[in-house]
Length: 205
Image (cartoon, rainbow, N blue to C red; front, side, top):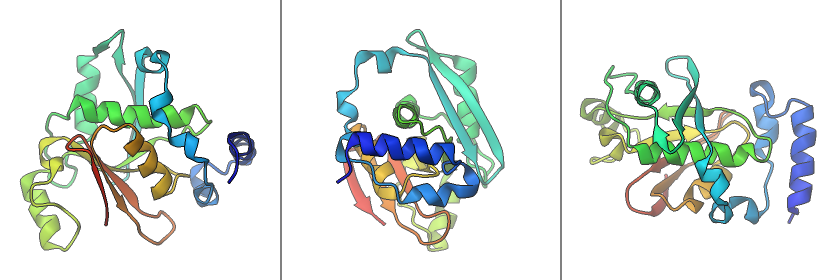
């Protein structure tokens, strides 16, 4: 098993070569960090009190944004509304309030890996989902729970270029903020992770 130093050294080399950029994201997918990389419980208070900027991209709409939404212990209302829009139901053209705890989960995941030089935005494949959209997915045979937390703004399906499902899901699970679903798929872009603020649990789909 590689040590933390080996991992950081390898990360620096890949970053210098552009391997963590979109054109070569697949080159970083096989990078396997040591288990202690997942230990978000070891974070100190400074991590949690700093300003929070969430960088996201929505492949379905082509949107990209970096939003400073929390500072000095308070959510910035206008930024929160913008994030709710970014995590909207793109297909159903519907917007809803997103659970602030979900935003914290997404931000903390992104901020944690940034400590290791991984600065990619979160790809939001699905955020809020209207009941109608959820029903259409189920009818099409696409994984969607009948009482999906997407429908109440408490779930998101995400991926980060350069992190495979095990690495990303393991990190999110270590925050112990809710459920984590691992969806493995073949192909150049791989699968995704479902993250929600419901009961703490995990599954594979």
